[in-house]
Image (tube, rainbow, N blue to C red):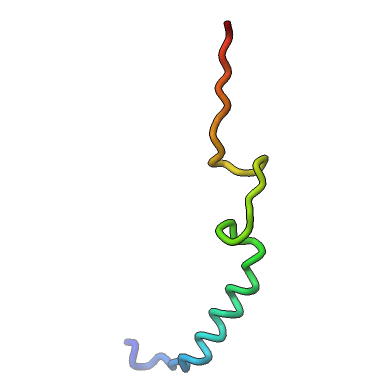
Length: 50
């Protein structure tokens, strides 16, 4: 089944992956800092009543 698929040169695939990464880098939370107000993994505040 894969015999009939046309291949892509590795240099072209690498260029496409690089372009995709650079294009989406501003939205990647691993590369950019996540603000404290929008971070779903921030430690929860403990509320205690005396």
